[in-house]
Length: 181
Image (cartoon, rainbow, N blue to C red; front, side):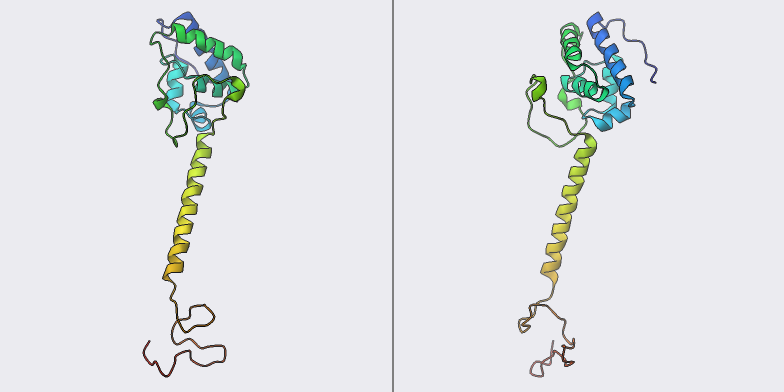
């Protein structure tokens, strides 16, 4: 279990209560900060800031932690709204602080709980990118090989054979009319 530093004395009571709940959820999830970063769209340093009381976590971060720990989302979101009103800096950390990943469509800030899209984990995003890159590379190599294969106009099978290769009958495929390759 992580030993947390004491929360800043300047942190309002509502914000302090939110951070304590987030810490409890993180402990219940059994994940380290690095584990949270791997399973969510937020970096390890972002989670450190949220759980130390340095920054107000965005709504998405609170929701995904609550889902991972099996907590009560309605209760946590109510705490988050109270903390937003009392937070010294006033606003949550900008979305740019989330871990880098493929840009997706913008999601409205306040969707009903049932309408919230499921966020794919960073690992899943990395697998998708790797699969797309591998597919593109395979297609490029196949096209290059197809283009590079030698073609012969007098070959009726459509299969390219280098000059001087024996045919099925055991005769040379070179024509006596055309001695030069």
